[in-house]
Image 1 (spheres, rainbow over the protein chains, first blue to last red):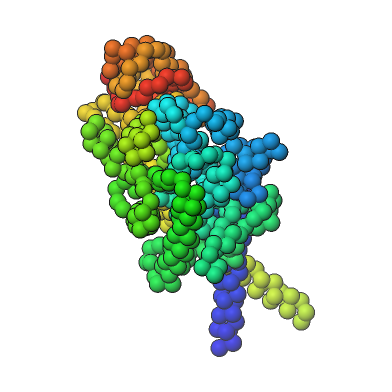
Image 2: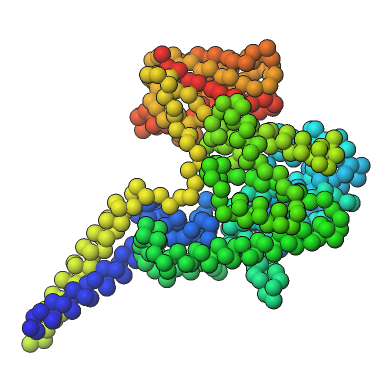
Length: 353
Length: 165
């Protein structure tokens, strides 16, 4: 009996020790290149792209490399922040913003506004080739969520006289609004007393050093996520359902605020809806949420999905052909199709020419 | 007596350590193997892999540029000529550079072609040498990129084909 107890105790101690050792090895794999196991190093194992700050803390691929782009309120901006350029806007954007002879179209959004089709094929540039009395000011910044777009809007709409406002929103921008870190630390909103309350500012340049991932055990997180994704058990699903609920509430308030400012100032407002390749095949809850919300508030939107699908059908090309391989952004073809469609829409609805 | 106790404790520590190390290594290996084919990445970025047409023809998905590029996952037989068919949209007149980009980041220039605004398709042939195909480790690569470069041109590719005959 005594021998059996001893063996049992040794076994239990060994199990705990082996779990501890495994945890140590995983941490070595995740944080160093000493042991090369890409499968276990992959940040997707420990956090979700759409929901978890920990994913973004562990994923260096998207991280802002140039700290000169860090903006204390916006998180980051188009280019370097300086005394002369406190918003960190590109030179040509500043020039367009300062041009007084034309009606300005302030175009807010994320990287999908420019796409990856090359300089000459960015949607604002293509539109400016067609517009005569108006000029598109590209205030988009890659990686922005709808929350950062609202902040950029609040900081810039007074810089133009009676502008036309466009928000280019990728369905994923809805997800980004709950994140506290993405390419860098970012501002975020919480709802307090039924109002948006801005948090996460000022942005700290040493954010990553001061805020490591909040993961007590990488081994537990890894196993929990794998099992949760496979079996979709209730406690796992409820985490993400609650986050989805939070996303809807916050984005709803953000759109309310954009609408309120535009209506108070009497600025025409248009949303342009962008999609990833996957989103062209089905209706995501983000797409449904955006369209329902915009319709409810009577805000006009230009939906790029039917435009791209129609073009693909007319030209007998697959939908993949609108996207840059291994990148996911629109290419020049997609940008040209969207810019032409948007120009036609604006010519008709806003009498632009 | 003391020696006996030290021996016993040492034996226990050794057994526990061996079991723990074996278990943890086994667990890591099992995790690595079992997760090998499961990706948690939410994006597939579309279906970009080669589409085989017939036995030796490959279609490259349409791309934009600059630079125009496409991934091709097949081994090119260096001794046979490679033919590109490039269908393009919009009128364009000018010179286009064509490269094969190796997955180690090195571009091999295959030459230039002149496009005229009266054309909608251009064919281009080239032969790549064995040396060009081999990478630093002296093995043929699994992935190649066809790059069509026109940094200032305002036109874009409708379709491109590569045919190895």
